[in-house]
Amino acid sequence: MKQFVSIISVCILLSFETQAQPPARISPELATLINVPFLIPGSARRSAHESSTILRFDKRIKISNTASGRESETYLYINTRNGSIATRTGRAGKLGDGSFNINDKKFRLSYYTPAGLYYTYYNREKKGELLHYVATMNTEMVAYSTNLVFERTSVNRAGSSKNVLPQNLQATPYKASGSSAAPTIYLYGGPTPQQFLLKRFLGYAGIGYVKTDKGIWMIVEMSSDAGSFKATEWEDIDLQFDKTPFIAVENRMNEKAVTGIDKKIAELDAKTYSGPCAYLYQAKKEWNRQELERQKQALARMNQGNLINDINNSGLGALIDFQDPEYSLKGAEIEADIRICNSENSKITTEDEAQRQSKTIECANKTKTEIQKAKREMMAITRRYPNDKAKALIEKRKVLTAYQKAARELDCDRK
Image (cartoon, rainbow, N blue to C red; front, side, top):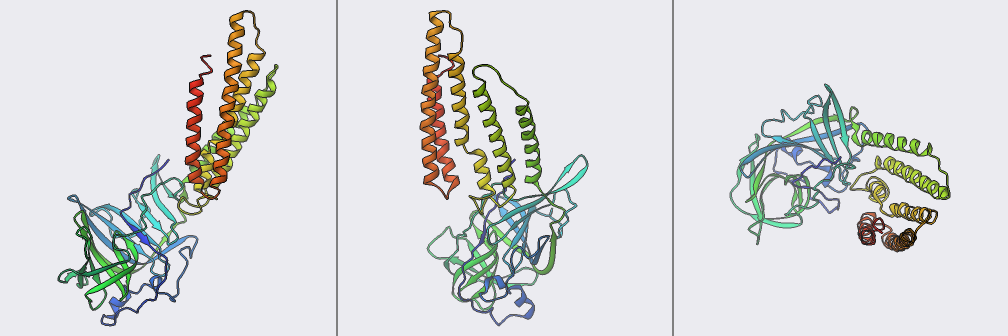
């Protein structure tokens, strides 16, 4: 159910500091390249969700990556007004001209907003039909980084300038002092001072825009012992991506899950019981039905929100509720009561049977004691972490593991 995406480095920080205007000694054409309203306090900005169906980008950067002797490339798309970015990554020479060809069965676009929302738009071919999906982080866990090694760092000139990009920009190398492991970054944006203070970054894999104490600059290359990232194209564009054809993959998955749950509920509703323990079997049936309904509600909530944002109320919060082990203890308690009832109402004809009956009832009661203990501990965890469901789930699972160990040691089935 999960698709794992490796992200080298994404950083969009949201603090606002006083910003100097772009350097004056550049051509009007290049001035547009370093015009980034998102990084300038007071500039007109737009929400990253300015349209419910269209994503817009005004910068496109092609990045070449070399690591461990292997080459790959990335297209980076930036909306400089709202700070959202998108990326497409693949083998060198396999991404075409950087346009959004959603009819390519290998199409895949990752989209990020300054708020931390993350979406993946991709295609799947099934039975000859090309299907368009979007994963909203409810089914994908991401190695998501919010810091670059040079964030809030002073860097010093580290060598001679060189021409980069088709525009033949004179980019100057800079490096943080005192660290041999720090990457070397090539900056372009105007006259080159001896030192910069790097404040905020907007881009991907170290390539993009950086706000400094001396204006906004382009980072056109970043290299270290581990490899390098180099911008080979940097252009102004008016590019739009229409989200309309893409269907939330979580919806499809959850629809199948709900169908399975509804089938189980129908099977439960058809069951009837008789005998001295019928009331307990009925209680188990009602609990099972409530549990299935709870799972349906959690599945519905999983379609809302995002794994990174709104962790307690939707998205991941629903996923956590779906897995909450506290609910399983109620079912275990009813099972213990059924074991006791069946044993008490069994026909005893020999002394051995009487002893087995006594041991069964004693073991079931001990199991109930362990269940009650686990329930109290889980309730205490819920109170201890009212605003951190993820932490609560981890602690509850520890309690459940301890209970399961105690139940195995009691081994009521053997007794």
